[in-house]
Structure formats: structure tokens, C-alpha cells
Image 1 (cartoon, one colour):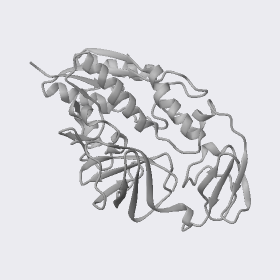
Image 2 (tube, one colour):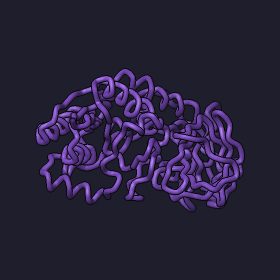
Image 3 (tube, rainbow, N blue to C red):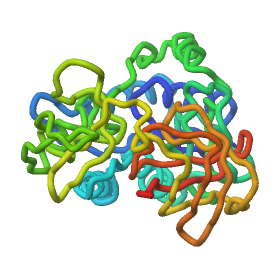
Length: 349
């Protein structure tokens, strides 16, 4: 009897090809659209209906059952509120990481298993082996950075059909099968609102006031639109005139001040250690003193590092070289070769 797989069909090309490949491999495939967000924002209509229809068209083309799971309330409570609280406190949270932890590999996983699935599958570029998270063959598309908070239990029951393909190969596979999503562009911006940028989104939920932009010698050199909108290392979006580019080095939410520098070697821009909070290790915690690799943002190069301390929920890490613009609230994700061992939330040193 064929193993039953529930595939998260988002309406994009990646999940469409994932479903097609699994079907061809002999699995009993059901497509599931997760409705996480449906609210329009001014000037940015939510694309969920179009995505839902595209996902449904793919399911019809493949001749597989199609379901919709409505996680909208849980998504707002677990992902959107987390993001808003983070920005309000002055850090830069990552909603994609939280969506994978709380929605796709928790709620979706649990409901799919309850509904009879042996496995879930998504169109992520990653691999699994024995409950471990492994990197994808395509370094440029590898998405383990966003998946590091998934549990080993969920990974035991997860398939990533695209782990050994590149993005161009996935496009080719979609065209070969005449899938309606073959030429669909990837959505940019916030993971759940399509084209809308973070500034436009936050403006709907948070009241902001202009404040001072202060340079490295303490002079006010301009005005910002609200400290909440700025992130460490940011260069664009600073309304500061001529000369060398300025980079954000910090901010004070109570004073509504943003601190910048035009010195690329400014010590406030560079870090040689990471303090981690809210750590999550997929199987075993890392060993102190052993060499690992760390990535501090998606697609950033990995840097050699060693753990100085590892406790229940925190860790301290020394880096082999300085990292520019280490951003509190973002994730540091650790690798032992091609195994993603987990990571944590970057804190203030």
C-alpha cells in the first residue's frame, strides 16, 4: 500500500513540482493549501485567492485530492504577533523561521498526521536523513536557515523532494509537466503578504514618530520616520545627505533615536562573538570547543566558530573572523558539515 503524503501546495512552482515528483515516485499524494493570511493592505491586495486557485489547478492537473487548512487565527497569534512584538522592542525578528516552527512543521504536520498522512512534504530546498536536517545541493537556494527550529520528530515524517535539484532544474521539471505555475515569479517581501514591504506592513499596526539620526561623534545629521523601521547594518532608506554612505549601528526605542556611522570599520558594525537566546537543537546540543560553521542570514557565507558555553536556552559563540551587521532578533544557524544542527536568536552582547 502506498505511503500517504500531504504536500503543502502554496500556489508556487516549488511546491507544485514537489507534489508531481512524489506522485511519480509512487506516493499517495494529497495537496493542502494553508490559508495563513487573507487581509488586504492599502495598495497591496493579498494574493491568497490567486495562490489558492493556482494550487487547486496544480492538484487538478495531477489528479490528486485537494484540501485547505485554515490557520489564519493561529498564524496571527503565533507569527504576526511575534513579529510585531519583536519590532516594537527594537529587534528584527524573522517571521519565516517562526512560520516554519509554528505553522508548517507543527500545525500542518499535526493535522496532516491526524488526517492519515504518513508524511508531510513541502517545496523547501533542504534534505533530511534519520530525523536530521541536511543542506540542499543548491547552495544558492538552500533553505535550512529558515528550517532550523523544526523538530527531529517532524523531520522523521517530512519529505523534501527538491533537496537534490537546483531552481533552474525545478523550472524545467514544471514546464515538462505543463504545470500552471511553471513561470510564476517568486513572491518577495514579507512571507505572508506577497509584495508588501516590512515598512508598509508595520505602519498598519504600529504608530511611529519622526526622530533624530545621530552619527558616530554624537551629532544629529537628519530625521528618521520611526526607529522601529531600521535594522543594524541598514544602508538604504536613510535620509542623510551626500558624502560617504551611512550604516545603522544601533537604536534607542525609548528615545526614538537611530545611530549611524559612515566608517565601514566602526567597531559598532562588527562582532567577533554571538550571544544566543531561545536556542533550538534538532538532535543533540553542540559540543563546546568543537569547530562548527555559522550562518547569520540567509545566503550569507558560513564562518567557522566554536561554542564557548551551551546551557538550556542560551549559548555563547566565538567567531573565527568578524561579522558585519550582526542583527539582534535574527537567527544564527549552525552547521556541522552538511548537517544543520540548529541555532538560536541573536541577542545583544
